[in-house]
Length: 227
Ligand SMILES: [Zn+2]
Ligand SMILES: [Zn+2]
Image (cartoon, rainbow, N blue to C red; front, side, top):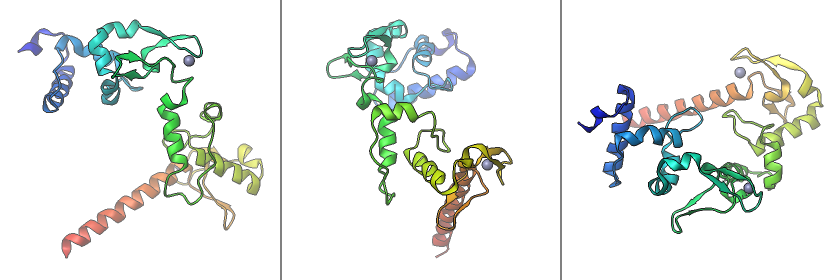
């Protein structure tokens, strides 16, 4: 009933109902329909969709400040600049925003945290050396993995390719066997044991491997069922 009065489209109403249903099941207070657009505005991700993770982080702040959050500028202790609330962590215990922005404080920066985690992932025999936050900010635009994230291993691999194949890997291009796009040679994975550069680009190669693994798992499952 209460959904009818709000000026939400059918799709928005549908999503809003799902949001409230989830909240109800977790014992959290439901949102009012009038709040829905504000929430989407405040906590949308890169693609403009409501991000549950962001909502979770800032929910208490939203209840406290309401839509004022959108125009709020918070001063950073270190760089002295005033920035939007999403650059500051909200500390639920004290009910305040953290005094240093994510750009100044590496431990507040989840991107850096995940890079560090990828760096030392258990699977790797040879973790890449620790990197500083400053270095991370300098290099994050340069070395991207197939999911478009900064990857320290990628940097390691490209530097090794320069040693083995020379600097031509930046200037010379070739087409990818799968997607047909032309890329510079460093965008292809290399095999250092028999010294050759693969024919699929890094993106296609990682998709191929993911598909291969998925098939293996499915095969394993269906074999188990037959027994
Ligand atoms: Zn700052
Ligand atoms: Zn490709």
